[in-house]
Image (cartoon, rainbow, N blue to C red; front, top):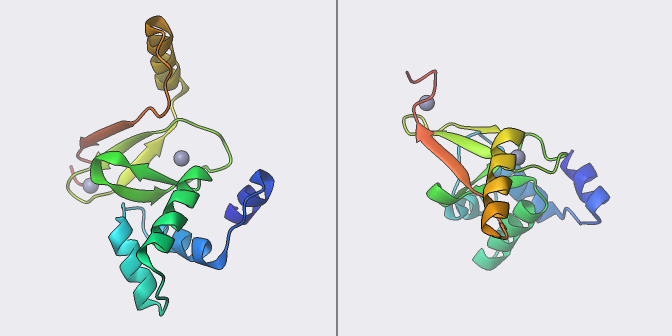
Amino acid sequence: MAQEQCRKQGLKLTPLRQQVLEIVWSSHNPIGAYEVLQALQSSGHKPAPPTAYRALDFLVSAQLIHRIESLNAFIGCPSPNDAHQCQFYICSECGHIAEINSPAVASALDDGANALGFKSQQPVIEVHGICKACQ
Ligand SMILES: [Zn+2]
Ligand SMILES: [Zn+2]
């Protein structure tokens, strides 16, 4: 899916970028840039840190992963095909993150921005709490 997505956007999913994507997708818990770097190194790669960080930036801009701002970490996007604003529910017990794409939330934010004459760039909605399993 990621390869198809990149092809459509005219982007190149290099082997390193693909490997970083696989590392981020190895769980549905968030992973920090430094942990990605360590995982790359333990798999035998020795990329310079900026190379690994650029691969993460690439994957974010290709909408294949999301950055969780409040945790400074990354997570795979389960629906990279649709352009979307997403909202995240983050469990503070187990670290699991669920992503939803609520058009109602997105349009409420757009309405608010329009009323203020504000030009939104990157709305971030991250809700911390306890997931169903942990309750
Ligand atoms: Zn997403
Ligand atoms: Zn939980």
